Amino acid sequence: MTTVVAGILMLGFLVFVHELGHFAVAKLCGVKVLKFSIGFGPKLLSYRYGETEYLICAVPLGGYVQMLGEGSGAEGEASVEATGDDDRSFAAKPVSRRLAIVGAGPLMNLLLPLLILPISFMIGVQMPSYVEDPACVGYVLPDSDAERGGFMPGDCLTAVNGTPIEYWNQANLRFVNEAGSPLLFEVSRDGRQEQLLVPADNNSLEGMQGLGLMPDLAARIGGTAPGLAADQAGIEVGDQILRIDGQAVHSWYDLRELIQQTQGEPVDVLVGRDGREFSVVMTPEKREADGDFLLGVAPLHELELKRFGPVAAFREGAAKTRELVELTLVFIQKLFTGNVSAKNIGGPITVVQVAGQAAQTDIAAILTVLAFISIQLGILNLLPIPILDGGHILFYLFELITRRPVSLRAREVAQQVGMAMLLMLMVLAFYNDIIRLWG
Image (cartoon, rainbow, N blue to C red; front, side):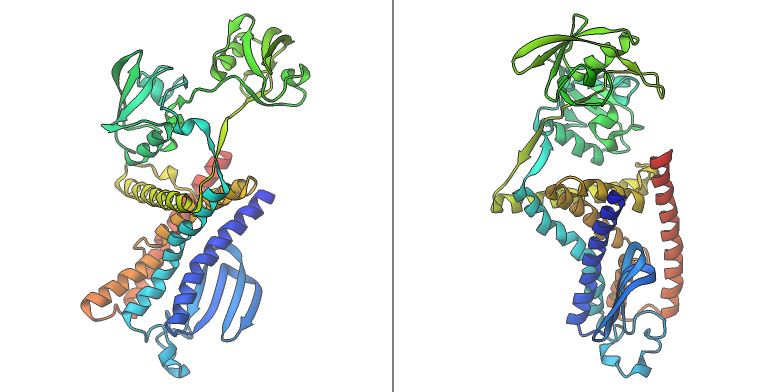
């Protein structure tokens, strides 16, 4: 429940930033703002200050700024003459100012990361230590795209579709640009170069691990499950499993395979701790859900805290913002061309879940996730769908070029079509969310 509340608060903050952009520029342009709402539907809280009513509503999936002379309601452009506030009407303003007001919301979402990401980098970002290591494979998941492509443990990636790869994280970023395409890998194997092909139908959008390529991971203990074999044997965080019944354990993946081979029989485990070694006997326990045998241990993931000074943090923040914008745009382009499955679209449940999980960690993680979602929110609102900001921008650009506005009736029809499109998109996103949670 705490995760959900934290996620909703983070999403609400991003909606506030978006609507604040519309509100501030409307005020600067002399437009009368009637309502400023976070959320839709029945109002939970309401406060009037001056000429504007500020609202928090029950459905936390967006918000709105209602201006005089906007749309076709009681105080819309068709009836604004009766109020005597023609000069403060949104519709009465030059098209350049209307464009500025509408574009300010998405722009605020796109600029926010430039403010918060440098703060995150100055505080310090926890990163898995392997992401800037050479892209060498520690383990290949059975029955994965990588295994079918011929990958073997120890392979080191040197290029993907002709683009050189030096670090693990470079490969992850490259996969988004190559989504929907075959992946031709160049790898270094035992001192020689090999070429491996993974067909276009793959899980590369989930990164190296989505393909089945896992980093090298030592058999060190990051945690134990209460009451299971490792806990009962006194295994501690930081211990390293060296041998199982005399067989050497080179990585975490070796450990898992050797435990499955025991079929639940007691095993002699050689453990390393603080420079000394000792043996314990453990009896793996069978998990009913899938029949796996468990010692009740979790791997220790080495994390590295990276902290930057103000100038370097701003540079890193700007580079990260650009990277996130490019990745989002490429994803949308691949989605519309059919190179990326619509199953990858996430909805509000996913957003709240991701934001809520980040809120349980540290401030740097919260700021990073806020930046990522803010960019997606900004770009989504710029799509040329009539009911979104991008659709309104399209209307005003048409007016700027032709010197005549799109008729109110045409806009209303277009917005009805846009609403239908948006509802279908939301249904699909909710469906994907539900499948991910309970599928």
